[in-house]
Image (tube, rainbow, N blue to C red):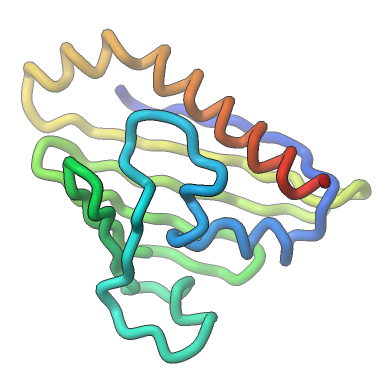
Length: 146
């Protein structure tokens, strides 16, 4: 599938956008086929900030079960999740930038499909992935601007 990216301006401070980027908040705004419901942390969570720290891991108990790991985290600025699945490597990033009206969020999904068959299927569904991304970040914007 490669890389898909979209930026959107949200009338909310970066701190508010950041709160919604925790893995256990994905189901509130993510749209699409990737299982983001019923996400449970595997890592120990001693403070609320622990769910944003590099190395924190979680999984979706929906089928298919998928594991997530935070690989980069700069509070209120950038977070990257690695999706661990046998047939692909996927990194999901959100980059936050303060603007006059609130926050500019750039959402990036970078996918590498491992097998030839998966690459063929990925090309067929690339448009669907972009559409799901657009709907997801519009939903996030709608929630935060209420």
